[in-house]
Image (cartoon, rainbow, N blue to C red; front, side, top):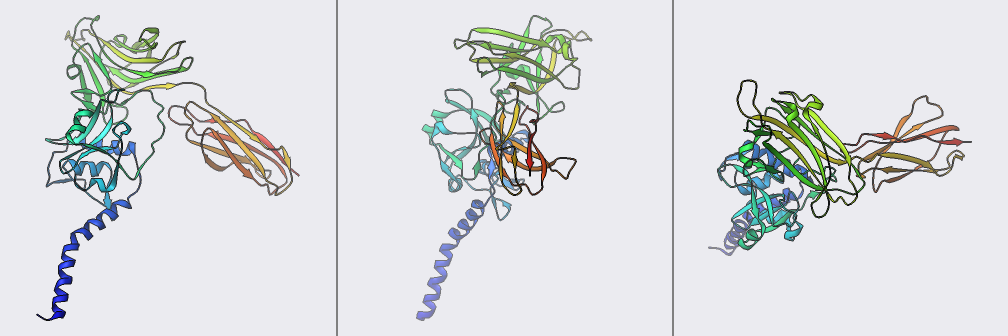
Amino acid sequence: MGSGRRVRMTSLRRVALLAPAVVLAFLLLGVASASAITRATILARAQVWVDRQVPYSQTKWYGGYRTDCSGFNSMSWQLTSSGHPLSLSTRTLHSVSTTVAPGALLPGDALIKHNYHTRVFYGWLDASHTKYIAYEQTGPVTKSSIKDLAADLAFGYVPYRYKHITAASPKWNGVTNPTFDVWASGAPVWWQVSGGAGSWVCTRSVGIKKSGHNALGLLNPSARARDLVEVSQTSRVATGTPYQVSVWACSGDDPAGLVLQLRFLDASGRTLATTSTTGASFSIETTALRQMSLSATAPADATSATVSVRLAGGVDASGTAGTSAVLDDFRLFDASPVRSAIAISKPATTRRHAVTVRGQVTAPVLYGTVRIYMLRPDRKKPIALLDKKLVGGAWTMKFSPGLRGTYKFTAKYLGYGPWGSVTSSAVTLRVK
C-alpha cells in the first residue's frame, strides 16, 4: 500500500473515531443555544406527563421525547437541538446542568444517578429538608412520589441544576399546591388530611375545576354531622398584617356543612384567634364552583396561620350516607393596601430642559410593571408614555418637554397576583 493511501486510510479512521464525539458536541451545542425556562414552566411541563400517565418505555416517544426517565427530564427542561426536542441520557444530562448543594435544591432541579436514573425535584415536603417530592418516569407510568434525601444521596444521586433556568416570579400565595395538582400516596402533597386516610377521602376532580389540571374532590362517608373530614395547611404570617383566605368550592349537600377557616397560632402552636365562614354564606352550588372568602388580621405573637376546609357528614336527599365537595384555587395572601405615588423634580421648567419624574409603589410583593401616562398640552386624552419594571418599589424617568404649556403625569401600577391595579394622583409640569 502506497504512503499516500496509508495517509488517507489513517485520516478516515480518525474521522470515524471522532464522528460520535462530533455528533454529541453538535447536539449539545444545540441544547446550549436553547431558550431560558422558568421553574414554573418546568414543573408545568412535568405535570402534563404525570396527569396523562405517560407509559414508560426506552424505545417509544411522546411529544418528541423518549418516554424513559432521562427523556422525561429532558422534556421537563425543554431540551432541544436545532429547534427539535432532544432526549439526553443519565450519562449526558450533566453536560447541560451544574451540580448544586443538596440543601440548595429548588423546584425544577434534578437528582441524577449517573447511568442509572434521574428525577425532577418538585419541592421540599418538610421544613427540615429531609424529604422531597419527586416527579419521575420510572414505570409503569410517569408519577409523583415522596423520597428521602439522605437515602438518595447515599445511593449515589447528585443534585443538578439546568444551566438555562431563570428566576421565577416572587411567590405571593402562602398556600403551597393551591390547585391540588401535585399528588403522592393518594392525596394532594403539602396538605394535611384528617378524619380519614387521604386516599379514602381525597380524589382528583377533572370535570369540575377552576384552574390548574384538576381540583380536589373531598369525601365524608359518615352520616353524622359531627364527624368531620378536613384538609389543612400551615403557613408563616406577620403580626399585625391583614390576610385574606379564599377557595373555590361546590357541594352537592348542605352548604352549611362546608366550613372555611383561618386560625392564627403562636410559636408554640397555641391558637390565638379563629375566623370561619360556611358555604351557606356564599350560596355554594352543586356543580358550579363559587368563591368562599374571609379576612382577618394576625394578632400579636402570631407566627403562623392554618387554613382549612372542613366537610361535615350527613345524608343526601335519597337517604344515602355521606357528603362530598370539590375545592380548587386556594389562596392565602397579605391583604395590605396597595398604593402608587408620583413626584416631579420641579414643577416648572423651559423647553428641552429635562426634569426627573419619580414614583414609589407600596405593595406586599414589589413586583410587576408601572405604566406612566402623560397628558400633553395639545391633547385632550392622556397617552401611555412607557412601562417601567418595578425594582424595589421605586422607579425614575427623565423627561424633556418639547411644547410649551401644562403637562400632567400619572403612574398606574398594573398589579401582581391578587392585587389589582392602582393609579397615582397626578403631578403637573408647567413649561414656559
